[in-house]
Length: 252
Image (cartoon, rainbow, N blue to C red; front, side, top):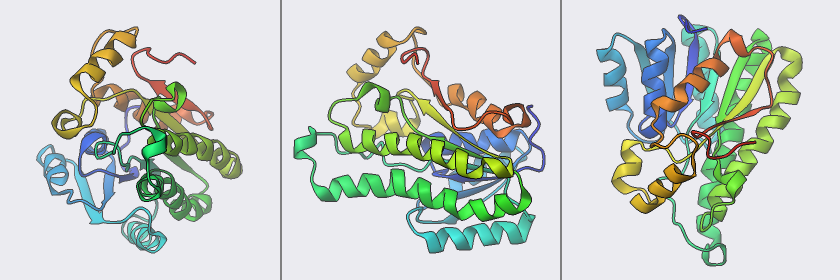
């Protein structure tokens, strides 16, 4: 299960936060990692290479089908395949939190475009190639907020609920080709970016901890076990599912 040697992973949002941690972890298990992010992913690449891994990045707008198609074609030209897609790009740390009746159309659209439309476009970009090779793993990142209905975050919650719904439909559309599509729903995860400039207060983090069965902060490393499992052959007969990883805060 743990050996991903030679697997080609396309990871969105790998310049920082969860995506950066996932990139380093994937490379540590032998995968070849391609990062798609509109931000500079140079620091992530350096971390991967310093530990002997292989990774490269392209500046890509996940909302733009043309950008994504070009990147996937480049991956196919280099490696001949794409085995895993992890949709981690999202507006979260930079979220403007406010009651739903104060959210303007521009802010709503900004969040939906990246979190929901970006996930859709990325799945659509890799699907023909995974269908052709009759294999593939797609892992979308949602959030436990879609279960809780977190206040002052309607745009974010709606976008992550959309990700869960798309995961289920895509799983049915791609299942005939032995492609699995699953989703991970993390709780509030204390990445460096969250600690530095998140709209989530220290008090909010304490509230999250208090709500969990496991009474501690959630860290990026807590999520990669689930990502690794869903990327491996051990999950070949699991599709359309949302796996909550939040220390027992949400129990489905």
